[in-house]
Image 1: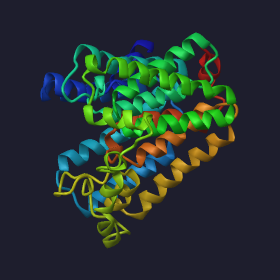
Image 2: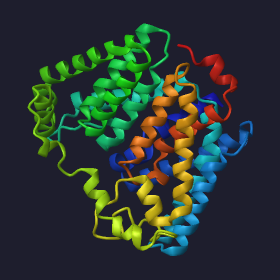
Image 3: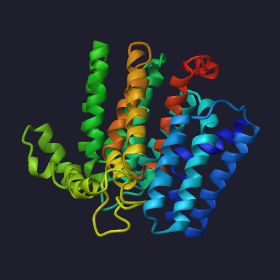
Image 4: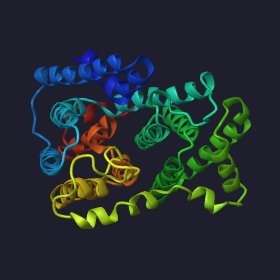
Length: 367
């Protein structure tokens, strides 16, 4: 079972389906995707069965049923995504329960290191690196989750190695979301423990290394120039705010107000069935495609987790930081229901709040 668990963590946390699709073609990518969900079913069959994640099941059922009733452009894609979501929420819950923080951190570490390898071995003209994850913003989220998990690690050598690696890999994505959230997470940690102010020093050290190696790594020139201006206190706000998410959200406000109760249908806010760019906001996507019922469920679910993690903020700060980060990432992306990494991180956090006496975590979390 442990081997099967590690295979599944590799497939889910390294974005194997999308990576194999781009690297080896549609046939291989589809087969890897099918394999992932078949193995999840197999893992669930042999695992101890515990409570269903009722909030996430209700969220999926209400979203898919309502949006599918209103409008579906591609029925095959609709059914495929619906089934995949239910499998990962039901079967993936047992995988998440049996995955310790140590295991989670190390698998994310390998993912982060793929970003660094990408920048060194496969440097390109685009200058924003993503490793296994193909999309720099998705890669940035992985690095931020890994960064959150470092808080509370007792082994200082391991802790600072992980902090540096996740930070440096995240910087290489040149994601504005990464820079903003890394700073927010760090400031929250400093508010809890003044000793964490040294993390700012690690952040500046990674930037210094990046500036020194910029030519070798062929970094994205436009975003690198913005970064230098921030450091020099000469920020050109127009560059930093160009193509912001606020502009993407505003394009869909009228559509939301036109059908607020039941929404406009499946994928109508994804940019796939109209000429608009996707809405880039999960909460707006849910209300825009399926209306108020799933919107209130997803909103209540994530803020409920935020409330629970805040109660254990002093003892288990990493849980609160992950809850903050999840809400933040949902504000800037719209492929929630088929995003395996975000769903798994959500499940992993929730099962540790739903049952804080989970023995595997208590016995294996220190490293």
